[in-house]
Every structure is written in structure tokens, then in C-alpha cells.
Length: 237
Image (cartoon, rainbow, N blue to C red; front, side):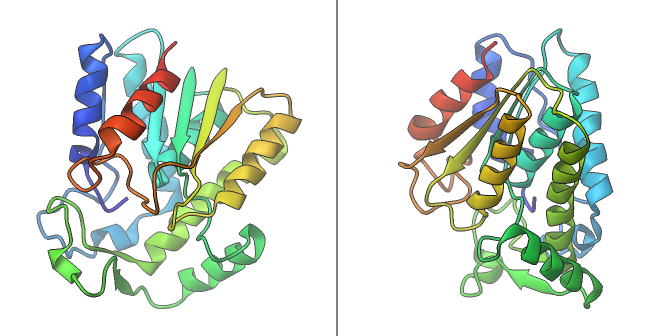
């Protein structure tokens, strides 16, 4: 969310070099040259879920085995696909299921209030504003966008309450020091799935530092050594 496929380019090239077909989708309402576009402020949870399902269907045309990995909201999309069974293997790295400062259920009330208030733009870094790196990502987000991303996470919990997750394999990976997501919510989802007998894995990486985007090496060089090898291993058949 607020980034683009370039974020995953180097990792995608590594997967392709080992013989995988790789597709890195662009999220709905993204891709505008204007980095201050209000377009992403109109994204909806339904669009996020549909984009995930569409990407998985596209993947089915690229091979017989479909694995999906995502970061943040991309991880939420990966976990949605694990619940719905649209993929063979899902890896969700630092999934955004709720903001870090609120328990999930009270936080959902906060998100619903946020969604009915006027849509406001917030900088990722109020000091740097539009100078923040990388240059191909948006320098901020809209409050309605934040709420809708949380709603997409809530859809997974709602679906999990109705049925067991359907994908054969799934790993939720948490950065122990992540400043931007609610790890407790991810643990709650993992616990629910494990109680349902899914046999999914929860992994906690404590050596990544206090960083959220641990994928893009242009802003986090440690991605190459700390993240890519382990993430590639989780995606192996």
C-alpha cells in the first residue's frame, strides 16, 4: 500500500532466477505519476480482496503450484488467500490487521469512526514530506485508506469464524520490532487457525530492526541478507 511493484523487483528477480514464474501486481488506485494523488484514499476493502483473488487466478496461468508472499497490506492479501484457499502456499510478512497502538476489537471501532470522518491526508514522515524515499512510492496515505485496509483484515477474521482456512500451507511472519502493525492481532489470527487444525506456522524474526518495509533494498539494504533467503525458503514447495 502506497508503494509499487518496484518494491519487490529485486526479490522477484531472485525467484525467477531459480526457475519460478513471478507476478508482482499493482494495487488498485495506485500507479499515478502524481505522488500526492488522492486516488488511493478511495480504495475499499472489497477492492483489496478482489485484487488478491485476481492475482491468484493470474498465477494459476503461470504454473501448477501457486505461492504468494506479501508485506503489510500485501501480507493481509496473502492471508486472505490462505483463508479462501485460492493458493497452495501463502506467506504474510508483517500483515496489517490493525494499527499498532490499539487492541483489535476496540481498534475496529476506531477505524469505523475514522471511515466516516472527512478523508485526511497524512505524511509518512512530516519532516521529509514529499522528499521521503523511495521516489516511486507515495509519501503519505489517506485516513479512509487506513480504515479500509483494517476492514480487509477484519474480513479474514470474519471468514475464519465461519470456516477453516483452505490453503494447504501458510506462514505468518512477524518482525518483533515492527513499528507500524499490530503483532498481537496477527498472533490472534494464527491462534484461531491453529485451533482449527490448519497447521499453519507463526514465525517471529527479531533481527530486522525497528523497520516496517523490510523488502525494498533501496531503503533497507538488510533485506538482501536478513529477509530474502528466509522468505525464499518459505516459498519453496
